[in-house]
Length: 536
Image (cartoon, rainbow, N blue to C red; front, side, top):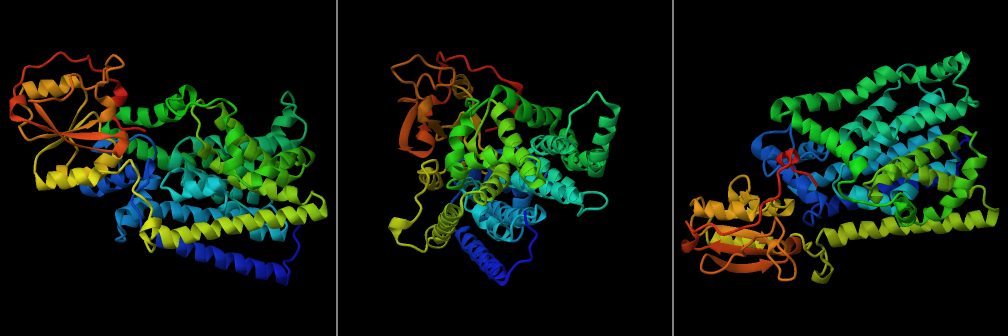
């Protein structure tokens, strides 16, 4: 590592990179306003923020009036704050991700300087890191992983500064970053930071002799500067206060769903996103391209340099994150985003140990690719997403939304109550709730629908929106969720089908259906306590 004074060439390169990042930020800001919400996360986040203002409830996130248990509130609160400035709803939902991206790059440079990396790497690190595919598609979309990753980076930056003697007293940066990570994503913010820091401390101590009292005294002398007890309390207090307030408002089952189900049940049982233990050995190559090509060489060098603080800290950070998420049954490639600064820094460091000409060639090619990627993304922001292009370049409406404005226009032209068969998906709620005048009414099963018709709870002229996947098919027996018998004359009139969400058909309930005899229907699926909440 080097603490050499920057040369004039280094300073010129620094000014060029900073100016390029400012221009990239302006391009991104222009693009915020030119396109609708992108499935699957942005419709959820936009609807949550809209309902916060519509219902005056900024404590418990809801979709269609039902508490949403996927994430703690940090991202929603930041988006709501952006909304108060007068920004359009979808742009406001994207602003926290954009802000997290540039704060991430700022702290990446701060981290690289704290690690005393070569000046050339310190200057270029934000460009290398910011052009990674895993960074662009995760910060570009509204999602809490952006602020989890920012909090993790801030925590590690504070840890490095503490270990290098740059911090005296309480390590606020370390624990503030951990608090941001936990308020963004939950206890995982602690799980992917503190154990790796502990491994680094053990590696710095050398011999592992827990049977020796002297070893335990030495371990405490290493731990004490972190102020671990006060720090953990500080990191968990915002999340704990929010959880208590939510429990008092909507019931303690909400906290059970938010923390136990989302953070532990999904980790050990994989409610969705099932993948094998080696999942990340496949995804890492594309998510971190082109620098992923250097990772095998970097990990080989990591063993050789494991006694050097910078290599060791980056190594345990990267490896612990990969191992932690590999042990989970539920996996997504974006889960490795918190490890991106460590992996990118290791790849950069490995360049210095390649033969001179090869190192220079690889450095120039890979840096050039990073610059090209950011330039192309900036052009997309300015000319495509902002709508300043010819029609053939305009971003098409995602199929998840396609046709929903037609439903809205029909009901506005032919007023009537709109009911969803089964729980309406967030894009449907986002597009159609304004014409329902409140929570989107729905029925959970065929038995509930025909019972309500028999008991005259629906008037003639009511509209029923049915997912095509839940209409009975001839080639398999009906499931408990299918609409059996299918809507048919003389009780229902099909109006049209739209492609949204795999196909939705709009029916009109005709006068003969009101008070009709209830037909035989499949038994609805049993209710779970989790049905009280919305989740991915």
